[in-house]
Every structure is written in C-alpha cells, then in structure tokens.
Image (tube, rainbow, N blue to C red; front, side, top):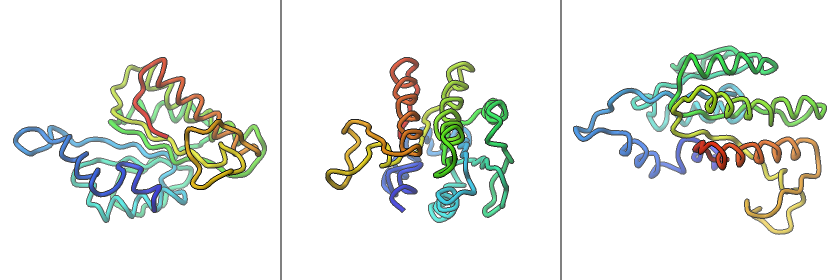
Length: 193
C-alpha cells in the first residue's frame, strides 16, 4: 500500500497537487497526460490498477499498461511485451510518447543474468530511450528494494546508506540505482526510485 501511494504520488494529497499542477488557468487540462506502466499485471501493478480506479485517475490520465501477459482489469490500453526484447520496450515508449513512465517490471528469482536483464538492463533501456529520442518525459519511477542495502542494521532502512547487496536480486536492483543516478546526473532525467 505504501508503495502504491508513492507510485504516481506520495499519497492522496500529492495526487491533488499533481492534478492541480497539470491544470491550465481555466481549470481544464490542456491534454490528457499519458502514463506508461511496465509490469501492469504483476503484484504491484494489480494494486496500482485498483489505486487508479479508487483515486479516479482515469479522469486526468491516459494509462498504457505493458506486461508479458494481459489481463484487462480496468479500462486502459494494454500492450503485450516480451521482457526479453528490449527493442520492443523502446518501440512502445516511442509509440506512446508518455508524459510519465512507471517501471514495475521485475523478478525476484532466477539466474544472475536474467535478474540483471529484467531488473537493471530494462530500466537502463527505458532511460536510454528517453535520452536518445529526446522525449519530454516529466517523471520516471523505478522501483527499488531494501535488498540493495543488504542486512539492515536499523529499521527502517534509510536510502542514504551505502549499497551493500547480499544476493543477486539485491545486486541487480543496486545496479538499477547506479544506472538511475547516472542518467539523472549526466542527462537530467527526472526520476525517483
């Protein structure tokens, strides 16, 4: 639930602020803002879909949900994507020209190569596509993990402690965070993890 409220906003109050910041003076939207969500039918993606409906976000945003299998839970655009094909992800980004990108796609288990491909390389491809194409994406959200920081010395885990993963999953998410910082610092991509 905490993750979901942070996806598009940091909670209902920021959702209202986000809506307000997108309105033109007359109180209407100049156009529908597009949100591209990778991993829309995964565990977190299903919660996000419920959140979209509960918060009535379909009034203000046009959502495009992308996943390996499609189960249409709400009235949005769905696109089937093979996560092994990063070129397909690039084409989807260029086709939809989103204002916001949320990457919920990820795996917890598998061999190291597969974990890196899905959890680190795919987010890198998303960021690289934005930079190379010159798309004007307002915000990118990548999902991190406490596993990036290793064994917790104190709870809650603070994001300013050094990365110290103890398993392949944590390592793949730590690499995603390093990629993200690189794109923020070098290309000015507006993103949150």
